[in-house]
Image 1 (cartoon, rainbow, N blue to C red):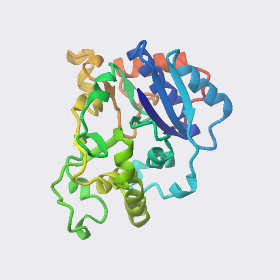
Image 2: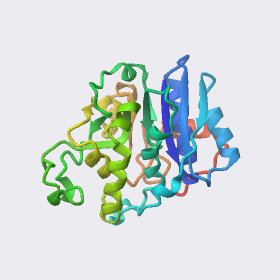
Image 3: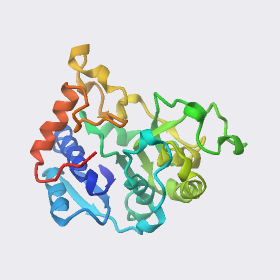
Image 4: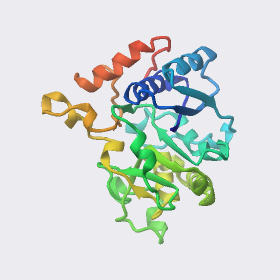
Length: 276
């Protein structure tokens, strides 16, 4: 399995948690990570990430020109917690060696609770990526609409809108469809006014050209899996507590998700906590 994460120093500790949960939920599965780390991620943090990946994983760092994603984070104060490193995911496919045909991108606030292997058997049908529909912003027009929506006559405002926290990427089709170039061009026009900048850009770039994946691969409503509600975290495969309050913050609800995060965080205690 080929996986990728992108992060800066503020999110390195959380990336280690993601990798640790993947190792625990996929025992014996060979995993190769292709990471993009911002320049502020220290050598010691990179070494700790290698340990977090587990005994069955290898870790490679991709070289990219980060200057092309030196973009605003957006204008919504509610989304001020977003890291500028969110744009780094756009650079992954071009930086991968040609031998990598499919890669799974995971946000650094996700946690793996089940095998990822079935996801790699999904037939993408020739589209550049698979993603899960966002349960809160379900269509392009929701929450005021993606910036510029009214001016893009070829976009149906009622079209489904996906969350970019988990992306199953067909690397060659992504390149052929020029997803990175289209997303960056969109951001050049709209990053300053975007709500969810990289996500809006990707929804624009692959409009009507992506596969909808089942919710279990990016469960944004995983509070329903808490045991107090009669569920279990392993009923999904990837939990994603999106939003401004994260499992590492005091305001996050107590429960199985918070416990899962901190169990893996303590396991990888060599990384400094992020102030977010």
